[in-house]
Image 1 (cartoon, helix red, strand yellow):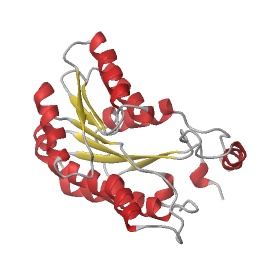
Image 2 (cartoon, one colour):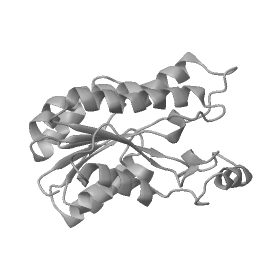
Image 3 (cartoon, one colour):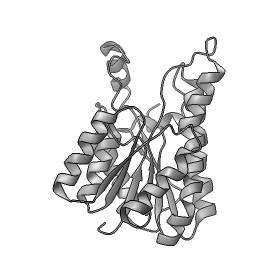
Image 4 (cartoon, helix red, strand yellow):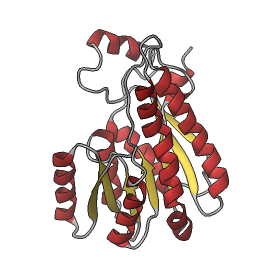
Length: 244
């Protein structure tokens, strides 16, 4: 991937940071977007620059702010002359029980999971077409199978999944668009009791959650694998999506 530039939203921590490291190790220059995780973003950038100068840059921004989208693309062009890979990773995730859901939650969840990825793809389209690049969206198996008490999130991810298919059609033949749909993976700290986690694991044929490495490897497959794949969403869920 030497000579290619990747932009990863939400790239400072957790899955985003793991994906950044994989892309960088493969030779790509990386633009790391973050919103609040400044210390983690700066540490990651410095780590990468320590192994290869002029190969990483940071952009802070709120993806719900339209002014952020062109700044991200401009940062990629400034870093290495263009943009080859867009990873729409950033995502809000929290429960919204029907009786308690608010319009602010709707705007936030649809903003981060559907609106921002779409308009960031729009902003990137010219560069991606010029460089015959690709987009990978982080979807979720719950785009098809709703998660209890998370209706807005699941609906937003369903929109994200359709975006993969629609953009794959509309940006072809120059740009490939695919998605990765994790199952149980990287629960936020304190988000769920251990007993509840164990109940979920019982429904996974492989009997364990995914780690950041497994998800990042799937993203890398979509980026570097066969260039005849587009419009597809790869479930990385230990078989949960086929469990009755």
